[in-house]
Length: 128
View 1 (tube, rainbow, N blue to C red):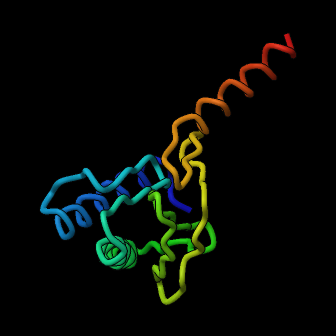
View 2: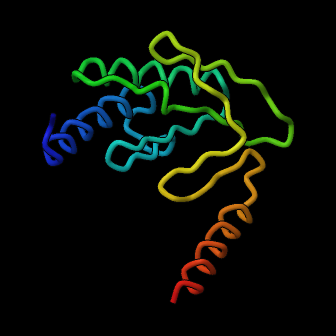
């Protein structure tokens, strides 16, 4: 088991390797906080390329993507079926997911996250 500080240093190295290979150092398509990573791409092909680079970088550094906790989602007016593979396994496609406490859905409507926070606040106020 890695210490938290050592893990952060290792993930920083992985992030640098990935962003150099995919975007020439531009971090705009990658969101990372500790061991939570989100990838954003304009096409399925671009997402697959990013996923392949991430899997390689993780493996190069002695880590492995947990495919059972990894999901893909499109944000579009027209639903699109994605077939994104990681480590030889197709990732599950979802209509919404939670990243760092914020729920995102395929319609990209911010009301989902806002309503969720209002409901949570209401529950907390009732407890007082």
